Image 1: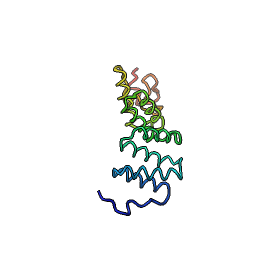
Image 2: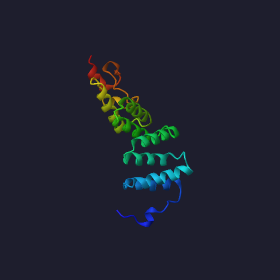
Image 3: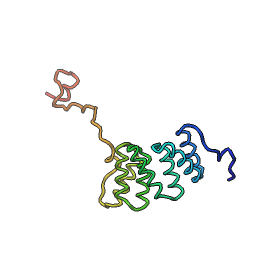
Image 4: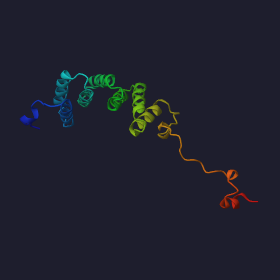
Length: 171
């Protein structure tokens, strides 16, 4: 696809707009442009986690899983709760057969997003792959909440002063 001159001009603006532009390049399959733009931004703002995530994704999608993994580790160092980086680390490890390591990344991601079905499904799949006797279900990985609903009173605790319960208790 031919590039228009406007497409190849340096992106100016906030770090956020630069990261968005790099992500658009990545989505269009223009990985070299995305990588170059992220690296340029990271020279000025080396701790900008969003640019590092986009850079990691561009590396991953261009086939360089080693550099992608390095970037996602940097993101986790900068922002331990970054779910996207943890998910990508889990996927990279899983693809490379490093199942225990992938499980660790997914478990950490689950701490930050306990209702995420994709993470829970990945954990179940991986745990089942290393143990044919795994019996967990998605419900087992759901966070537990204390029930706020009171159970109905048993017949023995019904009040005899309530006319509607007299017929159930018997005399």
